[in-house]
Image (cartoon, rainbow, N blue to C red; front, side, top):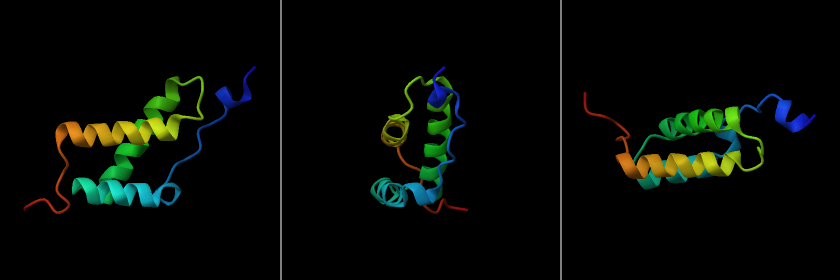
Length: 80
């Protein structure tokens, strides 16, 4: 049995990739917290069905970048 396949996912946090989250947020004009939330969601979706988990962080970040580019970025401070 593959131990890695049955292991619980490590929780990713802002501290795991702070530079990447901040750079992407700055580049897209999106709040860092939104980038982090999108990453967390993508990570969980990928982890659920993945057989090889070593690439999940890279793929999750790529999916976040693609989503922000495709749909445009949310403003850092939306108007009231």
